Image 1 (cartoon, rainbow, N blue to C red):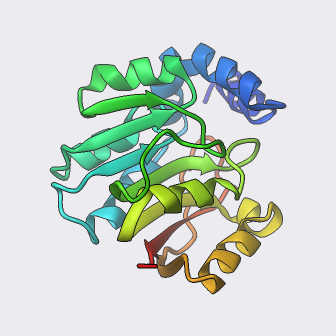
Image 2: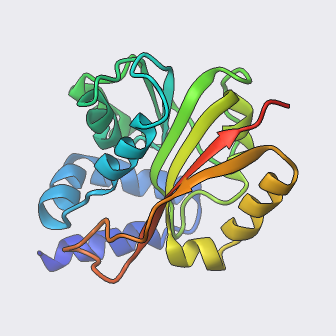
Length: 212
């Protein structure tokens, strides 16, 4: 694996704020798929899509939150999903996603901020590779629950160390205690970047939004 690709990932992780993160993703967008798939062996999009497909029908309205270049959309499309909305902070990444032709709609928004969607509109939300260092915060879950229909599903991957050390565990448990959602399934730990970051472990979490 080329050293510059490893350095590029660390450069993105080290962004100091969302503005800087957006600029760096814009710059990375054209090389992202090659770096992540060919050089890093990125498997998380298919893994998470497989979990989501167990719980909802292919005609469901799904938001890909933090869609990037559309790798999750491609994984869902391969399972027959067609009613996909992609959302990302980076216009460059969305332009790459648009070229894949699997999204009905693409929107530039940022996880952790107020989202310009009506409440209770999506049957499911999927978010892959966003709950990690220097990216979405635990507060992002508030808006994801708001825009998901009661009894709908929220599926996301999260780094195991970030879950334990960055406030996600506490936030997820607090929202469950407040009966906003309940955990349905948690995957075993797995290596989503077996070539690029073999020591980094993730899990897939599946929550169902409660009918309140």
